[in-house]
Image (cartoon, rainbow, N blue to C red):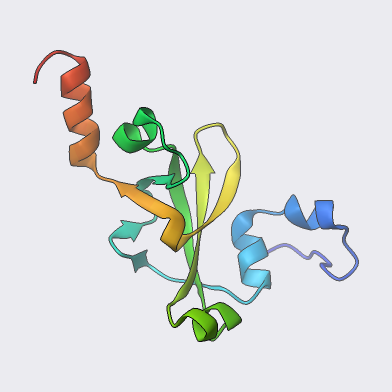
Length: 119
């Protein structure tokens, strides 16, 4: 991680840092998997309610992070997990794990066959 002074940086400067760096600075630690989602998986945010999101996903997971303990985990009794996602529009985003939906390769293949008239 590069030397960056979060204490003196503006909000815009802090938000311009990579999502993984922001999460680690906030006390999150990298983990390998959550509910079948791993780094490299195709996902969509459950707020993205359009067919392409369900069929192909809208981004690729670049990191999974957990903060334990956290006020979230203590208040809600569930794990505090955030994902770094490289969205198809080129921007990197941070999504809460409970808002993230996995798109399996089988689903992608099925919709590709349907579009090609093979199913």
